[in-house]
Figure 1: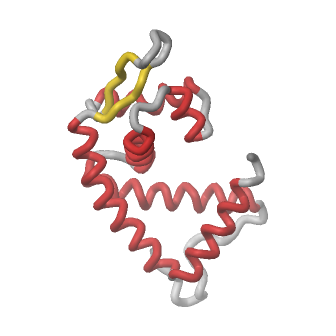
Figure 2: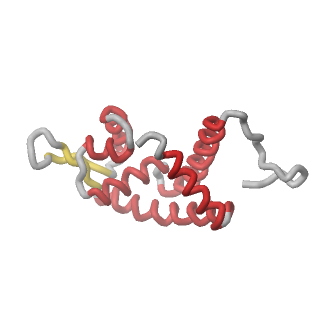
Figure 3: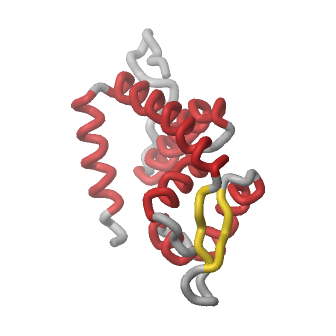
Length: 149
């Protein structure tokens, strides 16, 4: 994360399209977090899912899909790598139609390691932006997210 000392600008010039700028920034931040989480063997998306599953305590697929603002098919596809790695498992819910998602012991271990790495990524981003700029960014992102309730 470095600035071009000659021009004072960051490596990529801004696009005239606001959406493109937001998408490029989102991809860059996601890649940064993925690189920080890599030593833990999980991606940012997987860390987020493990964290939400842990916090929701045995959610169903529909609940998870709603939390992530995706459809059930996408949620199933996103959960597949976690199932294959043995970080989560599915169990029968309170009724025959409900399948609950729970962390395995390996999943809990990965989540704990991921939290350490995620904390380091959070600190690095705060150091890069500064507290005031980060506060403004959070406010702006919240406002943008509210475009689609």
